[in-house]
Image 1 (tube, rainbow, N blue to C red):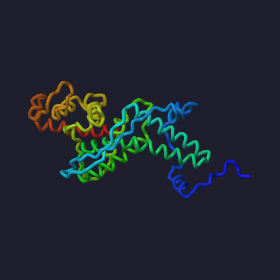
Image 2 (cartoon, rainbow, N blue to C red):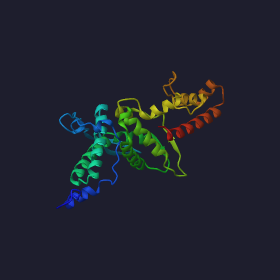
Image 3 (cartoon, rainbow, N blue to C red):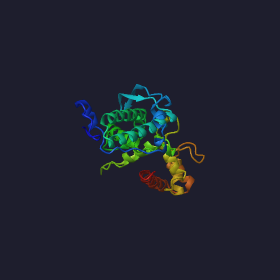
Image 4 (tube, rainbow, N blue to C red):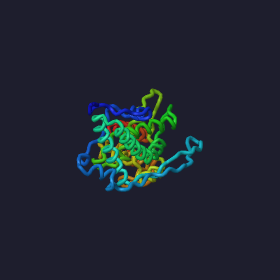
Length: 284
């Protein structure tokens, strides 16, 4: 008589698929997962229909060279939220099946979770591309930053808690930015391009540029790291639409406004930007 706890005999192909499952399956818990109707709500007859992102090939200019990149249409906020709950519910079920040694069923749920994760990642690849174009890093190529950003995006999907009510795009942007800033090479200098056109991020997000959203919170004092004069100089020099400012100003014009020399205005801006970069590393 075979014991109830004996393992299911898998084919060679199934064994390879099973070996891809992490030994410890991590998920973001939610109270809905324990409800008797959870299975039907997320994957059964009651599950809402999701509009799957479609790919499109776009020619873009990268350092003077035209390249074809594949982007996907973005998810609606409701669909993205639903997919995150489904993704973590699938891993919740998977973890239980692994504990019960139901290996064939575990393979099915793991593959289901992977398909959902792929949809979320594909829908946000444009965010990585747009964020990469906002950074200038000496000694690091555009494609190296893209690779780093893609890894950060994957980590974001694993860590994001949809139940907290935050936008995934904002959360992922923070993770990607911190990932860029943590690339440590002694000859490298990081410059945040606050002046570049933000149209791509706006189209991706259907909202204001995510990165400027973070910078705006710093400059408006919601993230308290700048002195009043540092924030004022940065807002004036980069022409940021904050505090009634309109248009970029030169250091000569700024010096007249704040009553200090042009060189002192430049030093104040440099100190403020350094503080902003540090604050980004600790942004929640």
